Image (cartoon, rainbow, N blue to C red; front, side, top):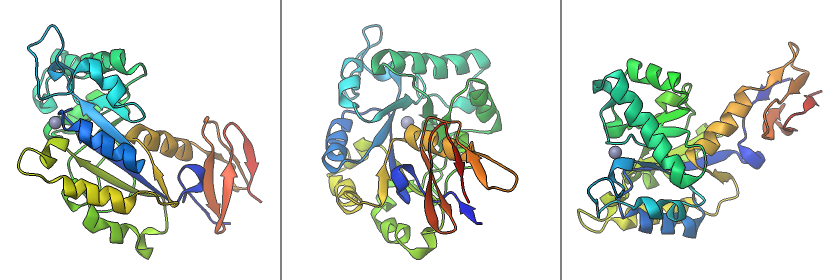
Length: 272
Ligand SMILES: [Zn+2]
């Protein structure tokens, strides 16, 4: 019996997630686009720059009071309070940058904010270790790998590509080479890149148009991907793999001898 984790939620073989940094006002247009095409995104925000009463206003940023409504149906995520290079701060400042951003964002989001992206993409082993102590659940880098594998460690989550390269990679995503396991297309960028140096919205519009509406893709936020992969990785098999217990609250799909098998949440499933 050959058992392979080959499916995402609802037996979908592929997934797409989008990841956007800094909360610029161009996020309004980007979110509208994602909503039109039913694509899900995660937005990594710096609470210091969101026009709070106790800080100088930042008119080019999304306002704190508007963030909940704007990002509804997507995910709000940490990008540190001050967009800090986390390699370069002491412990106290590190705690402030991460936890105070998380707290401020949770106050507006109304749910636990569980992940982040690294400001400037900067990180090192010590930064990763400190984040692990703080129970941060994922952190996105800016190191594109131009492929579709899942991260071993979600605190070093390399994306597939920057949005400028995304449309060109759709054919690779659809090639037989990427039909074996759980394949994730993970795109990152900043929405201001589409606006501030000439009109480049066609880049993301083209990508959304071509990748949306497909019945083989799960459109999910970063944390939804992480939660599902955690559920898969946390399945408990008997030694002979004839039975599997799913302790999570998420239904998981496995490929068993080339047939999809549902391993329901909280249930013991016999595989033969
Ligand atoms: Zn940033």
